Amino acid sequence: MTRRAVLAAGGAVALGSLAGCTALDGLLNRVGERAIGTRTASPAGFYAGGETDGVTAYRSGPVDVRFVPPTLRADSRRIEIDGWSTTTTTQAQDYNSSRSNKPSTVWVPDPHDEDSDGDGIGSLVTVLDVERALLVYADAAIAAVDGRSSDDAKAALDAFIDATTTVRDELEGCSAETCSTVFEHADSRKGLARDASDAVDAGEWDRARRSLQRARRIVRGDIEDVFADLDSDGDGLVDGTESLYDYLDGEPTVGEHFAVSLPDASVRGGGPGLADELTPQRVLDYFTGERNAGSCGGSDRAVAVHRDLSCRDLLSATLTAPAGRRGIDKKDLRRGVVAFETSGGVVVTGATPAAADAVPILGVDPDNTVSAVESLDSWGEDGSSGEATLSPVLVRPVLATPADCPCPMPALFHVRRIRHEDQLLFVGGWHIDDGALYENAATLLVADGPNIVAGVTGSDVEDGGVDLRSRGKIRKKPGRKTYANMTLSTPYDPGAGHLPAGAHPVCRDDGELYCWGVQSREALARNETGGCPGGDGDAPAWSVVTALDAPVLHLVDAADASNDVKFKAGAELSKAVN
Image 1 (cartoon, rainbow, N blue to C red):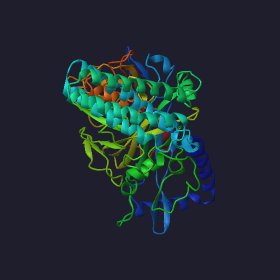
Image 2 (image 1 turned 30 degrees about the horizontal axis):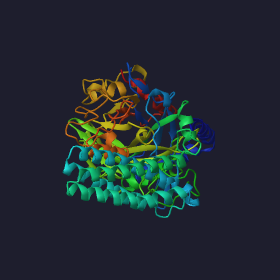
Image 3 (image 1 turned 180 degrees about the horizontal axis):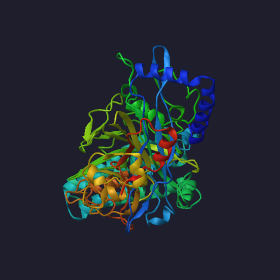
Image 4 (image 1 turned 60 degrees about the horizontal axis):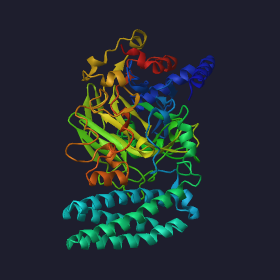
């Protein structure tokens, strides 16, 4: 319900009270209080941050505040209780031109729909990525043969043979001419790789090199043919992505944040409660899927949320989960998520499903412990942050289609539940998955602990009287107080203040994978053969950074405040921070 609708409703109640409705409202309120108890809530939102210097920062736009009251069923009747939401969009300017990174070729929109006619575009995108990995393995094997290193040559050849098998499996059922050609070449390449492996065993280095060079020429030709098939107009972009990159050239929406505040209410005598009913699965369903589908506004459940949630109309973008709304396994996964722990926090990024640690959904506990999510029936163990308790934050890949965007873009979605002041806060957002769209790039969702949850009064909003440092542990680096929920687009610097302490360099000293090494199969191959994904390209490693642990501001001591007062305070919460 919009502010105008609430004010109009308030006027209707005032007129109705002349006919005795005030007494009836009072009676209903007393009945509701006896049945439920906690019924009030007030707006919350992410802190928008302070002044920045020298970093490209995309800030959240104006706050959209809504009254979104849910209902609880008690004694065969539904009782409405308070509910509030705040949302903000993050818009960029000239998103493409802010970096020199080339568009990537590891993602296209809706490949399964486009593959219904057998053109194989989805399969070919994956095959192109694998073929480029094959080229990396071939070059590594040739270098090892030239250096007379049997172990390195055999390792690269084994990886080459395994990747060739992957190509064959991916092309099963694809009837396009290019698919058939590459499928036939796969057997030839595998045979040449096996011959090279036998030659290495026999110490016949010249023979091994000749076989490898023949295999490499086949791979190079396949790469050219596949890309030509994917880029039919020769503009350097995979067919079907041109309109998205055009959109990103303007003033695109590249993310959103939300906070939904509900009473931590339950029906007395062991009846249903919001905390039990609003499981992670149910909350995820309110944000991903078709908007305004069927009878989305109706519900016979014990807890019925407001239509803006049940019809997925809270955000300006439409979100869909590529692996299926309820999928938590890796089958048919097009993008996954991977987390990397640092000495002082955690970094989460999007990833190819071929990465060993890539999962459909992962959880980051308030103490920065990371785990794959095995069930969406529970929020897991809560941690503490001052007077609040927080669930793990869940992160998953999605497709996001902003209202003015011509097609979906790959994105990362996150959400967590916070308990504060007898209320449930569901806070999170979505952000563009840069690593799926650009070479040598990665979106980094970072945290160095739980969100600070700062209670803000009406007078704080008017006077700017909240000092976030007094509300919890904030690092002396600029960190969360400066950057808050901003999206930062910048060349990667592990010592930057917006990153957790101990953030790894692009090329780790221990040779282990890092964010840029999991964006594609080609990147995995580079890391496996001793290269540096993110550091080997012509463009610098690029990072798009947003905090999972941005401070949350929550209006408190407002149980008796009018909806009009809550609307105004909800829109201006960030002004409370000095």
